[in-house]
Length: 557
Image (cartoon, rainbow, N blue to C red; front, side):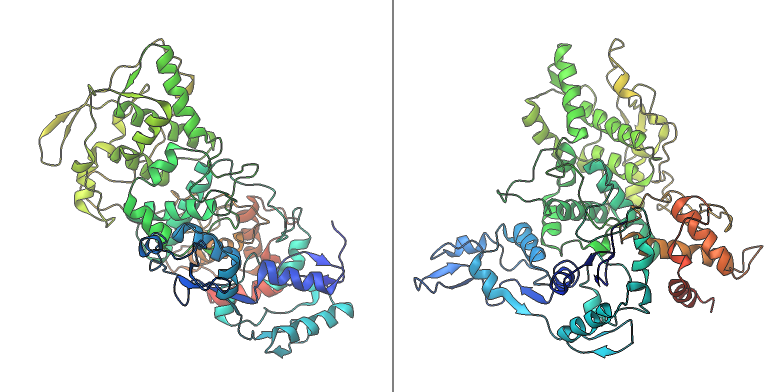
């Protein structure tokens, strides 16, 4: 454990020996005192040195109207930012630009006065500098974050701008964990690939969507969110070339296969850390999100194998079939049960061929006239609404698990949207081919898109509210999830799952309906976070302030 220095961050576990370092840390990593406005007075200004008009997005002198239009100056859905790096990300995604010295000077404004409170003496303050001096004096007199009571006292609009922060009353509890959270540090673990990161975040999005709306998101909503996740991750990597996104991947091409949805994602507000499952959307050890993408390398390996066997022509259907198998292999290696997200990705994969052309250029492939063809994208009507009956009917060829066999995808006679019979037959695989890459089992794959013309429904479960490691009323198809416990983003998830369990325990439909005791709450919290009831495992429920606030929120007191 690191030594505890005099000045302690009120947002994370870092400590400092100098007041200046402490103040700078809180302002730079947690709560910025500056605001940034994208082009508040238009995309051009007068260069003070030359007197000529200058483009604020790239610095070009006397820019033409066509040049300005190329920066999409009217496309901003979000213009105000609390951090300079957020403005830089916005410029990169929406305007294909960098922050210049002149625009940085013109677009920066001061943050309005911030109202706060002291957790040591409950004093209220209206200016940030007053808070700095006041709290610093408490630290000089020997106070620690263990003495802090309550929250920071910020107003709601300020709370929305805070980043990478723990509630102040949980800072001391976090300090005693094996990997205490520090905003300037790096998480001890991360997803291993872009596929794992994106599917984890999509599952989290689906969970929030079903909790707030009570239905599954539409295909377009999922693709839009997948693009937002990808862009939010990619802009965190430094890029000298604004058009570059690192290493290529057909998985990236698939997610961006709709130009309209990709543009919506670029122009939408940047996905914040509070929307995410993980506060850091990066893969440790990689310089770009799709660097050494295993999905790309495996499909390329498939093509090399085909060439070695003298099969130079590869159909779109064969590429789709192999890509679907790679998705299933990834799920098998992640030791997760592939259900909704993998289900959607495979349906999406077979609905689109737009991603294949870029992969062919990279692999220098020759397209063949298919001897078997999947339904064309024009015959599959993905609805903007997830409850569309037409969508269910058109996807009946995907819904049937019997379409899978041990070696590949076998399509027999299926009824098309018009009721006509269509026959698709996969080419028989070479029996001498190496099947070591085709070992992902499809036996446990559960299709959530029903084929009986009914809208897709969220599978309901009724587990015992006392079941160890389970959270009552959580859909089993979402699973308990994997969280980095020293990531502050696990706290909202933890509180939501605890509320779900309390709701189940107190439900009048529960045969053992009762109000959970404090010990029951602590026991369930340990099972939820650690899948273990060892009392040495500490959780927020072991903190008196958190427990009291939680009990008030759920109606226990």
